[in-house]
Every structure is written in structure tokens, then in C-alpha cells.
Length: 211
Image (cartoon, rainbow, N blue to C red; front, side):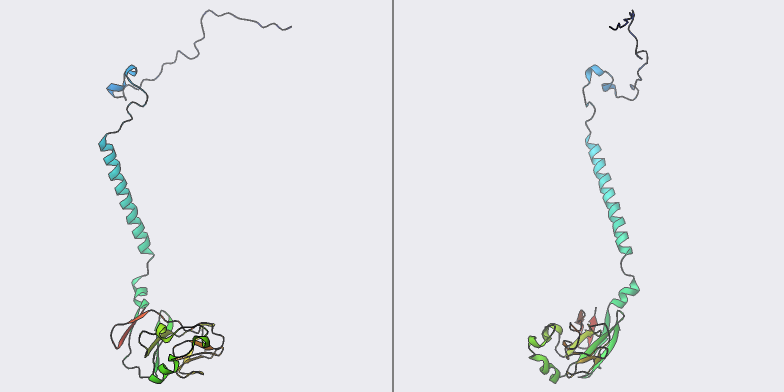
């Protein structure tokens, strides 16, 4: 049997009740100092100017973010010297029928060929079944007498020789024996695709803008 000793104390222990609570009345508004006349969330209401200030702050923040994004994106855009090389104007009035002239565009060889009437007729009715990469001459030219292509073989990137190969007025790649017709379509050899046609427009009858 165990006995518990019970002690008697006349006064209750203070349990830190002697510590004075801090008063924040100096920071409270007058209408909130009397706790008997306040309730939970008293003073949480906001005046209209608070929302207006917040709205203008949000708008200023969004404008600043937009300015930073524009500055960041513009810093990644191509410089003026690169943009100047992105397009090229070519005067084609001196390119005789049957002749193919070479130019440099974006570091690549560019072929502009003046097709003869015989060359145009020779490929006008070629069936798609005879082509590796079926395209009609109308899909590859704006004016049938002018062919504009990038002079890079679609096999392994060699430069084809204009006006050579098994097709009259076509192109021949000496590296691995790919043949293209006079519209730049792959016809024989390992090349799987036609010569690429870059974006171009005619500024006039004698000037072509490539790029």
C-alpha cells in the first residue's frame, strides 16, 4: 500500500500571473482601445483608396515586368549585320536562257537558273511515279523560266554541278553520283530529296529577293 502526501497551501500559486501584459494602446486606433466594444476581425475592413493603390501598384509591376521581358527578348534577336545577310537581292537580267548563276546566301551556295523553253517542256509532264520526292514544277517555281534553289545536295551536303548529269539542264553531284533534273528534283542516285527552294519573291522582272 502506498501513501501519497497531501500538502496544503493557503494561497494559490501565482503561476506567472504577476507578469504585466504589454499594452499596445499607443498603436491602436481610439475606437479599438475599448475591448468591450470590439469584436473579432474588427478593423480588417479596407477603404477604397487601399484597393486603388494596390491596383496601380499591380499595373506598375506588370509594366515593369513587360519592359524587362521586351529587353530580354530583344537582346536575343539577331544583330543588324546578321539580319543584313538574311536576305539578298539578285539582279537576274544578265542571266541568259540555259545559264545557271551561283551566289552566296546565309553561307550557302544559291543557284538561280534561267530555264529554256525546251527545259520547261521536258519536265512539264514528268509523272510523279518517276520522282523520289514528288513535286510539280509549279510547286517549285514562281515563274516557270526561273529556278531558285540552294546548291547543296540532299544526300551528304556536297555542291552539285549545274547543267550536268543525265537530265538536260539539270544538276549532278560528283561526290556520290546524285542526279537532279532542271527543276532541282532528285531523279537518280542516293539523294532522297529535291534541292531546297528558299523563300523568295520577284521585286521586279529583273530583281529577285531571296530570304
